[in-house]
Length: 407
Ligand code: SAH
Ligand code: TYD
Ligand code: ZN
Image 1 (cartoon, helix red, strand yellow):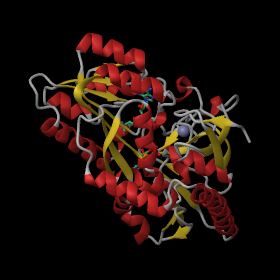
Image 2 (cartoon, rainbow, N blue to C red):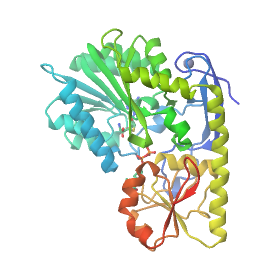
Image 3 (cartoon, rainbow, N blue to C red):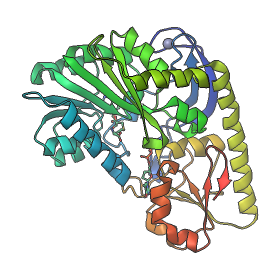
Image 4 (cartoon, helix red, strand yellow):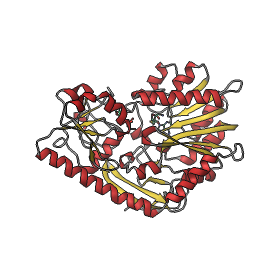
């Protein structure tokens, strides 16, 4: 076990789950790229002081985000709807001054800023992955190809002036240099400005056993208490926290300069809920670690049994999460011959590490398998509605969180 210190407050970090040797979760490869694939030990721990849950080893950001980044935020209807609603909210509630300005950290393919651009409001996406940044630009979104940090923030401020809103979704937990991010916010935000970010919630991960949310890109697993401590440490104040339904259950945090906004009642309520659920306590996290191993054993027993019974199992969806599950459990093509996914950039490639081939959804029905292992479980409703004919043909879905279940 490696000894690490907290990336936010420097206190010792206590490891509670080890998911073994893993590649980068969005490192989908071509068959000829298999040799020399990057690997690291995927393990998580919690800070003994500020309670922040974090990866023990962090993969350099340039290996994670680059022109070959496979995650496209606009890939599902629910994501498009959600971020359009976020944009409308900012337009109505925050961007109401004379010449407002919003910055998005990790704008990806412009799923949120597209709506802001269409409304003619000044904006800038900061996005290091060149391929998705280009897609955003095609939507009329202004994008700076860079990693957000103190220097980038200073450059943005110098060129565009202060920002009323800095937004990030499923991005802030990806950034290891949080101290630099907050120094950048200090330079960039107007006195009354807000930093709003939406990230996977530790509570959802723990209570839903969503261990597949743990992968190289997710450096931090925020709780309301740990975000509050982080904001305070870096000279800001957490003023709101709201649960939202994305990715199975996330929290939208609002951070402001100290005293600038009145903290909300729902923030206090969520903090109290965390207390009574003992979310941030070592015993809770240790139990999570033990349950992860149990799910692996149950899933592998089921998949081996189905193979022995001559059943065909295909994977459905190739989210980043599927890399964690397949590599941690050791699921190979002998158990799951391929995975289908609607993202063209993933098709024709192999899942990182486990090397299951990714094929277009059309291959799912050609012919239907007996079972579909639902890797994209956060889109269960959308996918099951779309694939009703599979069930009508006698097909069954396999879920593995919070428990292994055939449905
Ligand atoms: N906001 C979108 C995309 C999330 S994926 C959504 O919620 O679906 C995370 C994105 O953050 C990627 O596009 C990645 O390239 C970008 N990213 C990672 N580190 C970053 C950093 N330091 N600054 C800005 N963007 C970053
Ligand atoms: P996503 O929710 O973006 O998760 P992660 O952040 O873990 O990568 O991944 C969902 C994946 O599922 C994405 O690759 C697209 C795929 N997908 C389908 O193949 N069919 C569908 O109907 C939906 C909704 C998603
Ligand atoms: Zn800490």
